Image (cartoon, rainbow, N blue to C red; front, side):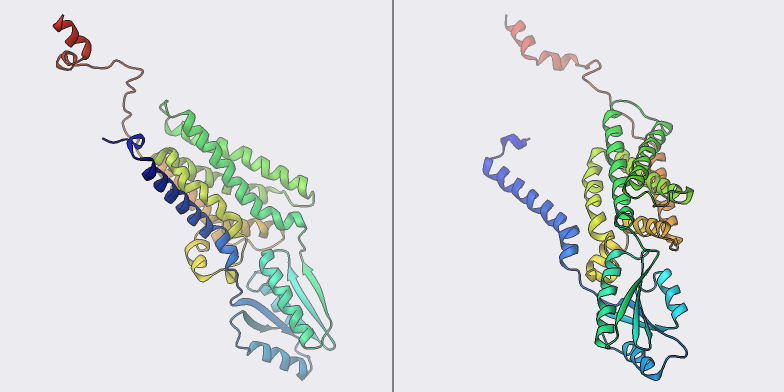
Length: 345
């Protein structure tokens, strides 16, 4: 059988060039392509007017609600109701109208990309209505608070991945039972959580690091490590071809709100990537938001999936001929060059 070394250099050059182009294509699609195609569509915003608001302001609110826009989806509500919608992230910003002024209300618990778009649109609407606008941010997030949720998701993934890959590489020649594999995954998760918590304390000492935040970080880290350990056990180091590119999706996909993503990216990547669940869940815990059930159960499911893969019966190990005795039959020995030389002599 021909080996790669036996193939003509031109064929090898073309094949390796195609492989490189395919890798660039995939990485371009899941990273830069996401950012290059960002465009607002149905961004949820609210306009709030009080029950005693003058008819002119009510007319402004009704006009906005009836605006046929592909970029923005408007909701009209009372001020208290609108702020509740903002806290639950059903809207990304609120424009509160009052006689002679307007207030743009934002929240630190909302994804910064959604907040940025909301502020631009709402400030523009207030300016167009001839109303001076001030900006109020509920539960304001510092620069570290805006960066930490996404950074934590990426760091927990890459920390667990490197540890699990190294564990797989170093234990390939040894028989590892379920207990050892679980120990490897758990051991990979604990230092990763410690590193992330240390970064939080260093970046901004005001970031909450209570048991709710630490427990959530531990759940995410353990689910990542169990899934990675399971796939590495199932596929060996070949699993890195799947697990490593997923890391690149964290800042590209999870860093955006779905209303800014191209519909194809929203359906094929954002809809299932675990990074967006961990990012939004952690942001809610850090900024006094509401943690959704899906942001917990997704990681419980990932942990169970990884555990089930680890529980699969292992294949019977093949003996390593380099360390054992090579069984050479007599008829094979007769065809060895040394044996033929002896007979000739």
